[in-house]
Length: 185
Image 1: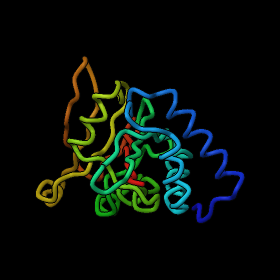
Image 2: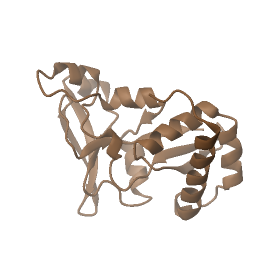
Image 3: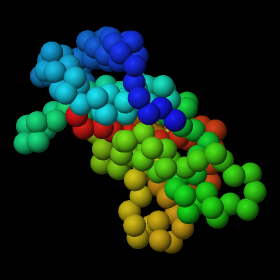
C-alpha cells in the first residue's frame, strides 16, 4: 500500500482536484479553491488519503464546509461505485465467515487503510442531491451496530429516479458493489 506521496504525485493530485473542483461548482458554490488548497498543503497525510481515493476511482471532490470545525469535506463523486473498491465484503467478520471464494478485502478494512470513513445513509442521500450516482452499481454504507450484530449490512443505489436502501449479508460481494467514503480536511 501507498505510504508516501512524492512531490510529483502531490502536484498532479492537486491539479486533478483543482480541475474537478472548478468543473463541479454546483457541489460547493460558496467555496473557493485557494482556501481548499491552503488546507490541503497543511495536511500531507490527508493528501495521501485523497491520492488513495483517486487511485481507486473515487474522484474525490469538495461537497461542503463545516464552519464550526473549519474543515472541507471531500466525498467520492465518481458516477459509479469506485472501480478499485468493488467485489469486497462489508467487513472483516463478513469476509472471515465466507467458506470459499473469499474476496481480497472488505469495505471497512479498505476505508481504514485509506484513512477515510464510509458514508452513512444520510451522507449517501446528501450526495445524491448533488447528482445521480450509482445508477448501474451500488455502494456499501456504514451499517448500524444492531443490524450488523444480526449478520446484515446495508447498501444503497439510485434507480428510477430514487435512492434505495437495501440489506444483504455482510459476507456477500458483487462486482458491481463497492463503497464510497469521505475525508474531512
